[in-house]
Structures are given as structure tokens and as C-alpha cells.
Length: 526
Image (cartoon, rainbow, N blue to C red; front, side):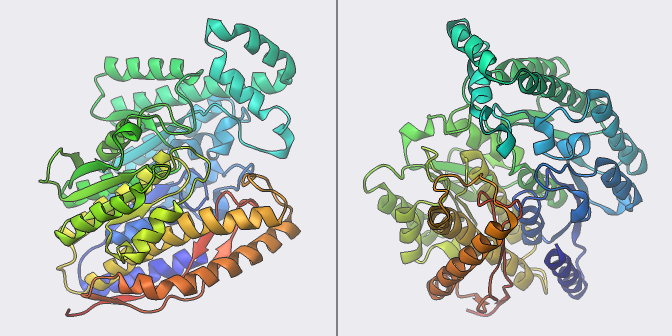
């Protein structure tokens, strides 16, 4: 987090030179993982926004919940009227984070009481736009050594138990799952639904301006469906369909809300046209989700504050690549992306894993983008974990950069800092989503005897050894890829060679990594 503080100080310095007031965004993140914190802070810089979060030591770590009361106290000490927007993940306030939301360690009355800080925020800053996230609980519990024997059984029970045709299997699972653990799961779901409902009520009261109810990892059928019905009926009853949305995804949501906040702040909503590499996958439900791909795309465009359009009046084109198992489609997709860029169009790319067996960038597609020197020209790019995660990272990067291109790049002193932020994020996605998730992680897991087990926790000694191995391999890739990547950067900008990588496994597992480096770009006359 110290690097983020230094980054913000440098940002404030450039703001003083530019003589343009930067937006200030208050962030209460879902937890301390990079997608929820680092990505959002860094993405804010693309839109010339200072994203300010509580001290990281208050946010908890994995099964250690965040300090909800201390976070609320920190918020109340801020000059709330100095912020242009607030992004609040209610699960951090209510339970101490996403993992805390999946267990019944915080009773409903206390969780509801913790949300009262939102009323105090509204009282202190009546005009502050508040954008909130409340997670609809996923089917499976968090993976821990303690629940390894029955975790998947709970997930299966949650998928089939509502349906008469599966009652025999459900009853058998209930015999095999420890009774106390199944009861804890049920109580957590019941409590979480109450928090979701309270979030809707707070929106009705004007305490929250815009609310995303986000479905964590799920399937088309399961116990979450009754939660959806309850919530959707309530949204309709309260006439809140324009201010409350229920959609797939979780970890990426603070970035979507950041886009929405900055679009409102600058008064410019980009028009986005979605293009799909495959009509068949366009209508297919992706792994760990409960709705067709095109629906997730449309919902996230709306959540990001942008406008979806069906034609070439778009300000930015969103190319959704989900064809990694279709022969020769990678090359032809890259041809289509190149044609758009050559025509002067802004392009966002989401590389989606339609089977869920890699959860990182596709090698053929990524190497084709690299070979054609296209990556540095993109407005947004991502390829990690679920479709919702990927879409909800690439899309807001692209919409924010589109806003910055329209509203900020012509301002004296801003072009270099904004373009540095944009290129840092693109390069970070390439390193993290493809080189780490697809290549380095797979090799490192195999070397440590845990192939296919990225969520497996490592003891401190093994974690340090894993970090060293991954850092060395990733740095070698970074050094190798930089010359070609540098050549893909448009001629009106120059970027210096980045600093060496810093690499950390913050939750003692390879499922996610904290990757950092310094990059400096400057605007030049082409």
C-alpha cells in the first residue's frame, strides 16, 4: 500500500502543475485483494481521479475480517464534502469483506447496525453521490483447509436442493455435510438477503444513489434463484429499476462504479457497441455465472454509466472474444480488431475463457495481438477469471479512457500523466492476466505439486518460495515482451522502460497476485 501512497502523492503534484482540479473518490472496497483495491485506485488515475481508501490494515485479509467499526470511524473523520463521489461495498461494512459474508460470524442485527454509517455520511454530505454494491451470496463457501472435505457438497446441495427432481440426492448430501456447517451456510444466506433488502430500502430513501446487487459465483439454477425473485420483486414494487440493478459478478464492481461516478462527474456518457467473436458463445452462459454472455455485457455497460448502441455511432467498440476453442478464430478476430483500430476507432478487448479451465488469457489470441503490435493501442483490455471479472475490468478502463480522451487530454499538463496511467493498466493486464494467470501460475503450481489448485493455501515458507519463483519468471517475460509492447504505443507518446517488477501473493495462494512496477510516459509531437 506504501507504493499506492507514493503514487497518489505524485498524482497530487501533477494535479498542482496542471491547474485542473482532480476528482476525489472515496472507496470502501470489498476487501484488500488487488482487483478490489489496487485496480480501482490505478484505474482512477486514467480519469484523473484520486481514489482514497481506508488504511489497508483495517481491511482484513482472507478469513480475517476487516474492521468494520474502525472503517466507519475513519470515514466519518474525512472531509466528506470534499469528495466528488463515494463507492461503498456494503459487505465490507456489514461483515468485514467478501469472505466474511459467506459465514455467519456476524449476526443480522449487528450487520444492519453497521450500515447506519451510510445515514451519517448522507447527513454530513447531502449532495455526495453514493454508489453501492451489495453481494448476493454465491453457491460455494470460500475454500479453506477446514472445509475441504465438504465444501463442494455444500455447493452441490445449494444448486439442487430447491428442485423436487433432486430431493433424494439433496437428502443424501444433508447426511454427509456436517449439520452445523450446513446450518451456518443457511443462516448466512438468510442474513445476507436481509442486507440486500436493506440496501434497496436505503436506495429508496435516497441514502444510496445507485445500487448494484451482484451475484457472486453461481450457476443457472440454485438457492440463489429465490433470492433473485425476492429482490427483483422488491425493486419493481419500489419503482427503483433505474437506480438498482441485479447482475452477475463481484470482484470487479468497484471499477464499474468508478466508471459510473466519473461519467457523471464529467457529464459525458460514452456510446459503446458490443461486438462478439461468436454468435453461439454470445448466447451461452459462461462458467460460474447464471445468465447468457450478452446479458452480462449489456448489464455491465449500463452499470458503468455508458450507453449501448447497435451501430457505428459508438465512441468505443467493445470486442468480446470468447472463441479460444474455435479453430482459426483467434487470427480472424485480431484482424477485425486491427481493422477497427486502423479506421481510427477506439477498441476495448475482453478475452473470455468460455470453459473455465484456464481463467487467464488465451495464448493464441494474446500472441497474435502482440505480434500485430495492437495491445498498446487498445482503450481497455482484460482476461482474468470469470466473464464478469474480465468484462468488468476491460469495460470501465475503456469507458474512463474514452471520457479522459474527450475531456482531459487537451488540458495542459494532463496528457502525460493520464497516458502513463492508461499504459500502466494495459501493461499490468497483460502481465497479470496472461503472463501470470496463464503461464507462470500454471508452471509454478505444477512445480510445487498443486497443479490445478490455485486456491490452495500455502504456509509462509512455501509462499515465499512460490513468490520468488513467480517473480523471477514474470520478470523474465516482462523484459522479453517490453520492446514489442513499446513499439505498439502510438507515436504521439513515448514510454520509458518500466522499473523491475514487485510481486506478492497477498492471500498465500496463487489465485491472485499483487504485481507492481513504475512506468513513465510523456506526450510528444508525432
